[in-house]
Image (cartoon, rainbow, N blue to C red; front, side):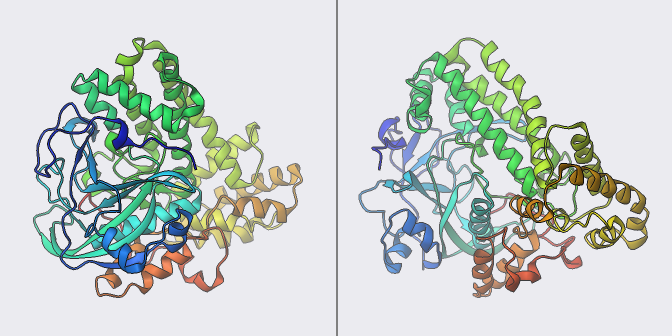
Length: 515
């Protein structure tokens, strides 16, 4: 194990030590205490991950610690201060309004921070209560682990607890609040520092703290860049740009839509963080967003996530500019993003198609299939997984199979038959030219095209059962999503299109930031 320096050991703390809501200055965090849960109950514990972290809590101890009922041994909980741009507008101080870091520990996986989401108010809760409900907590618990096993950079989930509290929430912000069961997720990352952690210090002109934070991030999470300096700061920005871009490409590969890519929800590790109103593409629609708050502008739609990542990086660059003093090196890095995105995007889709990257024919196949997928309202997961079964000799037969994955009416998808047959023939020509055995191509394609993802309706079914004290479906989905690329014939029922009832159901197609 390395001798990790942790956030709360290095950076300045708020001089006040109470949980009362306030503006915090000249500090990167505040010491706090979790709210005592009324009747905590540990309903999910990620035992395999706990073992990998070297944790040896009994179930009773885990229930106490990961619900906030008792402090983690020899640790002092705190909440982080950060700001952010929300939906394109500066929002000022935000911070950990419903998250409390309960431990910073050395583990066999390196230094890790354990954070409780929904453990009560902090100085950063603004007008909220700092709590979370079972609905959103199940979604975070399942999705963060699903993303990890899909190979997407992400925070992890260690546990899910009921708090015993009833929490008032207005699911769609439409004036219909109701009581829901409270819950707490323990999530884990090497760091929960965000783009907004730098933005708040820059906005307040706290240059000394800004430098302390950036030096800490480089020394602990980017040590290969060398000792902090102006040149190192530029290299850090380059590396973070590349990590963020890689994350976005992964999102596009599996059909994930984050839903609320505010700068305070962007990790300085290039990890997926803050699972709120996220969703998974079912019919391939680049304009789809799961977030009802974003329904009009669709700022965070699937097809715009790369552009938003660049916009957010621009804001981070502006925040650290005072430590560099030159705009040109930062601008040069930002100017690389678009070109790199299109190159990496094309490479990724070539992998999904099982063809080699670099030819004009491959590029044309990629662009044509994406247009066809959208026109056909084709189920993204089913299409890509089924394509590995393509028979070069029978394009028409394969179209008949593919058409079953469309959400269009039969006559509508039939109208696109000629376009699909033409594309399948071009695809057959290229794959035959490359000469790779069908079995090898299938294996490669199935390694990047998951059979199972956490479809929105699947999570909702698990939530509705759990709200009736039945966690069997949460358990089933948790097990299923640990091996998303495997056939898992016992779970074949989940390899299916979205059911009609889920099309306009709250929690399946309509989500909000409410938790």
